[in-house]
Image (cartoon, rainbow, N blue to C red; front, side, top):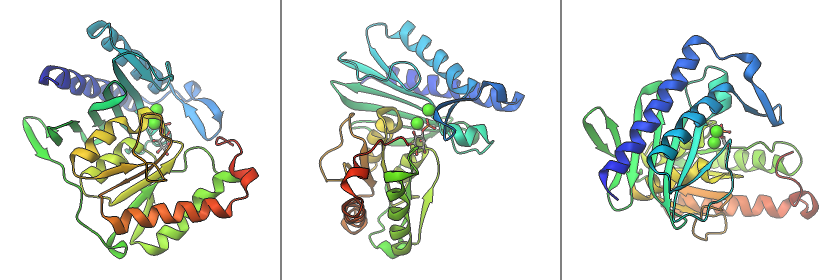
Length: 283
Ligand code: IPD
Ligand code: CA
Ligand code: CA
């Protein structure tokens, strides 16, 4: 992969982030907030404006590439090269003026992400990774390599999770997982932005992150970042991640850390009644 395409994606994520900051500065139009699956799942004018901008730039510069994006084309594309876009990850945080949100742009070749960019507008931090070239934080002309942490004891670990949008019915199992792992570790966080949570695993700030219900635009850039930083991504059952994965354990690769999550989610799943476990994820 040449540097031009990487720098194009970085510049695009930064410009989309500037657009988001502009909307926050002038004040988000509350009338623009719409519910998707319910009051717990919203989309704002900012998600849509950022996506419109990113998609038009991608289509102009790479007309033969496929695009998957959260608000427009959610279906996995058959194109050889596919851009994967979350124009605003952490919408609920953004809508409440919390600074934990990001822009995610990934590029996959034959279903395997090779490039990942996450931009964090509130701190003007840019994170990128390319397979074989490492994972980096770029500040102006300065590039700092990212490395996962070496912490290998649960008692020294800080983890994060997310509850997607399912917090009732079978979705309550997420709270049980949280409680169990919270008692075994220094702490468990729920940060509200998969993009930045993955970047913070890659940067060594968090030892692990697990979530069910993730979508490719949430995790494709972070996938490249975490692996290039020395970490590990698998599905809950230990099989390798794919773009179609929904359950992921993302870790610094230390067996004690990863295995505790795998064991906990399996134990909690076994306690949930099969009928409700198979119920709708979005309830
Ligand atoms: C969501 C956030 C949240 C995570 C959800 C994502 P959105 O993305 O990343 O932290 O728990 O799984 O869907 O809707 O803010 O782009
Ligand atoms: Ca997202
Ligand atoms: Ca989003």
